[in-house]
Image (cartoon, helix red, strand yellow):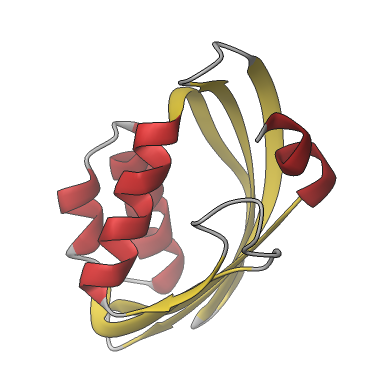
Amino acid sequence: MRAVDLVAQIYREYARRDIDSVMQYFAEDAVFHWNADAEPARYCGSCRGRAAIRERLMSLAGDFEYLSFHPFDLIDGGDRIAAQVEMRLRRSTTGEEFVLRSAHFWVVEEGQAVSLAEYYDTALVASIL
């Protein structure tokens, strides 16, 4: 499977909120970088390993209801993929809804995601938390 197809499949599974299916596409020692200050949100910063990534994604799912998850503009750079993602979220504790756009940068090796870096509007996220 081409790297861009793998990332597209990950997004399809994630949009369905099937975290366990998503995790099968990550290498055992994959790294996920949420490029933001970890102080306002426990899921910012970096984590390594499939189990840690799953835990972080489940933490997000507990804090936010994903009303929509729409990846677009996937850029195929061979083993490096870039994408934009628009998410409509609802904060679980307050019911506040907002739209968050993020930029994703993937590295895929031997058919598995080994690295994902995510960038987003940290001021918006801090205001919601």
